[in-house]
Length: 525
Image: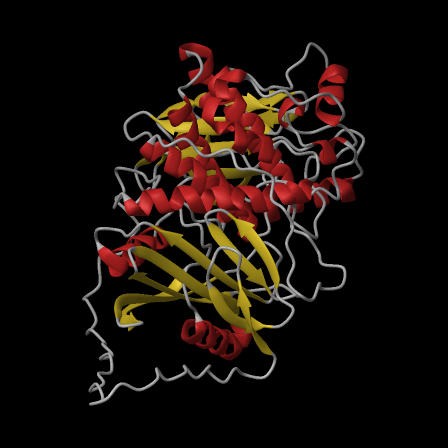
């Protein structure tokens, strides 16, 4: 390899790790140079990234730490397996420097597309950003923050349209310092969250979601809404300036506003972003602009509840509303690689139908007073709640009401359990088709349930009507408390379709099931 300022520099024709022959340079950034290469063992084209680690002013010990840290972080990123995250094949060393071997994407970056073709239509921008949201969700599940989400790091394959998030070069993994933290600013300021502007070490995965909001604006407008003439002006715009999304975001404005919130706790969750954008990209149905929610509490208010953020709760409701439209349209709204096929499982064999015959009563020969219905005996601690939307259900006392149209939730004070209710027009396919459609989406690459597993749908009945019960487990909310089990019942009654469910921590699955059984037995539309 040739000399480059005292160190060996790669060049076309060089062989890395005795296997990867460099052909041409694809690009160069602050954290490294990316080369196209041929894997001479497997006879395939790959991309190899030569990491540029800072050595000036560092002791030999610190330089070695940088080196080991780079390898550790590269290997951690290699654990991510997601259709919208670039595949890392290998991590090797050459001339004392780490190299990352990745799949080679035959396409252009979003930055190149915007520069050469101009801004995208909102639906195409939604498709691309939904894929990026899915990639971030997968990375965050591994404890990895990207920290440099920008158009140049989003690749689109020419042949398939597959979207890939790449260049985790300044990724942050909890418990380790970042390879590029040498006292200077890293990342792209016009796509950087304000909490990172003020120091960065305390910034969590929500900082990637701010970047996603700026990326969405750039996709439809050509540049970040925080682009300015100087770094000082950019920092001012991000940190304290008025946030004015471009008019070109159009129907995506609620999503942009929910992402570009300076309070990280109020930002829209990646799963909700993905749901809304996938649905809009597939159907063209504009996400509704919801009204601000009004806090409503039952009899007991929990002491010092920990809010998850008004905007996040708000847009989670929007996500649910749009998701219903997708399922009702009998389409699995998935952002997938066309050449790889769908990750959704094939339909399972229909389980046997379980029916409960409605009791019949022979009329008495002479009229008699109508019997007084006997109220069910409720478990200790439960009470019947009559919701203002008209339904009644027995739930544990002290649960907190939350309305995110078209859904109503009741939360246990510690957020261990949640009851949900949704009412809509009947689906022509019936309850089983609705549940099956949601199960298909949940098994796909753009599931809103990270770690979805153990999904089972059973035909049953409710109040003498056909019903479907969907049970599944997923990794849970972003609060890090662990996996959750969900029991979800759907049926049609009186010309309306009802969906009632209870979820709870997997460690308390029996209580979750008991709460669901009580809610099911006492629910009155």
